[in-house]
Amino acid sequence: MEIYILLGFVLILSIYLGLELISKVPSTLHTPLMSGANAISGIALVGALVLGSDTQLQQALAFLAVMFASINVFGGYLVTNRMLKMFKKK
Amino acid sequence: MSFFENISSIQNIIYIFSSILFISGIKMLGKEDTAVRGNFLSALAMFIAVSVTFINVINPILVLVGIGIGAIIGSLIALKVKMTSIPEMVALFNGFGGLATFFIAWSEFNSIPSNNFQYLLVMITTYIGGVTFSGSVIAYGKLSETLKVEKSSIVTKLFTTFFYISIIYLLYSIFITKIFSPGFDFYTILLILTLLGGVGFVIPIGGGDMPVVISLLNSFSGIAAAFAGLLLLNNVLIVAGSLVGASGLILTIIMAKAMNRSIGNILFVGYASSASASKSEETGEVKPINVSDAYLILENASSVLVIPGYGMAVAQAQHVVRELGELLEANGTEVRYGIHPVAGRMPGHMNVLLAEANVPYDVLVEPEDVNPSMDTVDVAVVIGANDVVNPSATEEPGSPIYGMPIIEVHNARTVFVLKRSMSSGFAGVQNPLFFKENTRMLFGDAKESIGGLVTEFKE
Image (cartoon, rainbow over all chains, first blue to last red; front, top):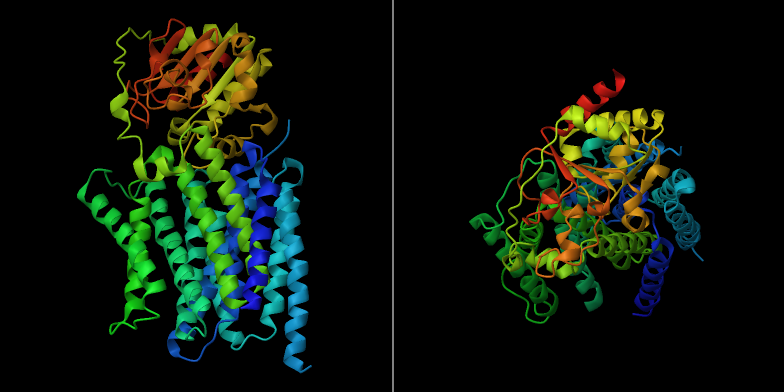
């Protein structure tokens, strides 16, 4: 249980940190921020890599999780980059 | 300390480093000058976290194949997609992230959770991940206009019911099943109900409210990843997931504020039920104008404000709009673009479209910057926007959109409204702007109308 309290602490602090960091975003960056954050949520890939694989079902689930998280990661970062490159100053 | 414990502590130390990069990355993503680097830093953080996890992966070849397939599909979509399809693209990627956490939780359920807290985490992660996935798929369908469901239809009502059932079933799964082990396969039912519930969550929400839903689903996918992190005792998942959850939440709040509605009202009530309060059946006379007259007025204007809306995206008019802007500037006119936060179908939709057409971002202004000096604007050109310039929001306390911050174009000297017909906007509210003394209606396709103006300027 100890470990959950510690990790819960990390969770709360990270959310708070996120709220503080991003509170003032110019509307120009709303879409890139959303899409960039979306790419970060592909961090589930790390979780997918450490899954157990005792049964066939688990192996299949792990494989699918890796694949879909990878689509999220690669697609997310590339599309964000493509979008950001379009924004130019006068 | 055994060899494996060693690896695990090294991994954890590198995860901390990776978390720092994620935090710096997302911070830099919030400022124009550093955004590209911020995105790169966060990609680097991802690379580091994944690489260090890969070291002790059980089945490296299978994993590489999975990553490879994902990389190819993801990259192809990201590089091929048209900029106008960005909203649905973001929704889809978001759904895939949610689906991954859904599978993670499912797999963990089969590892037989060792304690009650883990059990609870499995149920919650399953639910958030699944709702994020099926909700995002519905959002994708709605945004790409492949899915058209009436809010009042029986299908919508059915799925909305599923959404409520799924919540109750989730509570049952969390609190009851551990104590009174059911004789049936309750978890499979949870998996199915979760997916149906996600459909029911998004399906009643209409087009103009889409920016809120997308931001919220974005937030969910982060929260799902953070919960998966708790489940797997993995700190980088928690940190990165929480950051996404927070940024999605902020965008959701910004969007809701820009509509002056609570998040609950947007998600569960919608405009339809409040619209009955609308009393004003404005029946003035609209004053149409043709392209050549509009040109004469624009030619003599010294300050022009363009207000784009979803109609500009539909008509694909952003390139001709930029061309007109450049011609006006060559003519000595100051051209700015007034961007309302909820114009379009996702946060920042108009900004992306204009950037694609090479409009520099520093001529884009937000409502609160431009409203005080609106009376110095000679011509406000409204292109396919409606609710975000509706003066009822400031003048008519009975209106459903009363109190919503708008771009007050009615205070400009002249207003051109480019519109296909006299239909009302998403909110279903009549727009008194069209009947104002200083308003001229330029009926027709926005792209053709602006194109006509461009030709007049060139001649």
